[in-house]
Image (cartoon, helix red, strand yellow):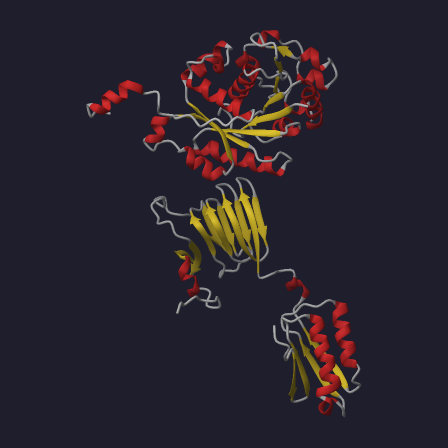
Length: 218
Length: 264
């Protein structure tokens, strides 16, 4: 977002115009550019008959007041009829991509989280960590971890030191085999494959999360 | 203003009372003014371990309910002038007092004594809440067993969510030969799980049992390994830097001979 460039893209569609507004730059900058484009560079298409306009904000979340200010700018052009404004639902706004927490989850303690969680610390035997999404533990998992508590079978559980008393993903419950002790000490993660709990090395996580950025080296 | 330290563990039978008695006595030995408080109402033991059972007139509940003044309930130790004990009641149960009442009593004691050592009952219910109410610091006692470590972990969690910051750990009743053979948890393993500062390790010592039964805290007997351990802990409470004791040193010449002859 460094270069002052096209934060506002105007596209023509069959029955109107779509305003694609960049979702990474400063909102003020965006409004400035929108105002500029409406007043200076695009006068020819923006005058004349009434045109339907769809505004798409990408993944930007705005307040009601910010939205009103944007609409005020668009309304300065009498021929623009705002048909829709698209931005993420406010409920989603409360769920960030993942949350970072740290500390110790001790025996009898339960850590709940909505969404994905990156936990820096240990989960001790008798302690539980429950997430609707994925659980990544930078530390020892000695207690219970339950990923996808709302039933998301695609959730995974990863830990630097993987020695859980029990693992749960969605409805599946699994406990480590009794001869678990002699495992190599590398970070691992648990996932469901055809309804069965599987464990793999963390470096293979891309097989389940193809959208992750993969480091390929040079 | 003195300092109130609660000795707790979650699990029963790991040595809270023995530890309280010995740390209290060791602090008195080092010239500090100490008061021991037994909060195990209904199952009091501290008086027995201290050998002061027959001197009790009033107790904690009497003080809380205003039947006597605090000073009347305190039992003076027979060995030290500056060591006192506030016994628990034996006839009531844990609900006989509230955390606020205990807090007030401990606050009162802190004005008079440099160290107030609170012996906590097992469990995490009312008795535990009473015991930690007035404490500034906490010592968690565990033995190198999974069950005890589990309960210690639970208690540490509860202490951390109360106002008592960074509890200290005592690993009690270690048997070096069992640790060596891999049949007992290593101290390292315990610390790894509990993740709090270690303030002392106490080897298993038969003299402790003997001492408890005779009403004379082990710490009085300089021949006991456990006594040395407790004295070290007391010095660490005072802020001294004392290295951890080596657990397998006492074998001495005999084991060296064994080694020479290849049978050790």
